[in-house]
Image (cartoon, rainbow, N blue to C red; front, side, top):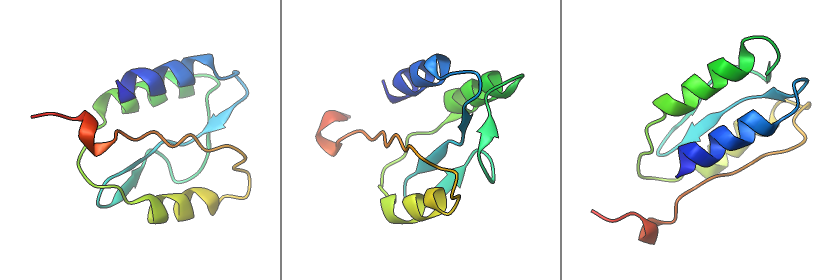
Length: 89
């Protein structure tokens, strides 16, 4: 569900948008070192990254937000997480 929603968001963003995707569990992993344009091959590269995401347990929001906000160009953050009670074994 998370990958589907993130992919939808990426498809709907304007061509001149700059994005980064940061996954977070016990540690965080960024798609790029800084914001990356969706123009050209950027959108397809971002969508491919989303499909490869591994949704692990843990929620390292602090380090993830600190990294994300270190770029002064960031003006919007979408924080997508799955509540623990939603996942069943």
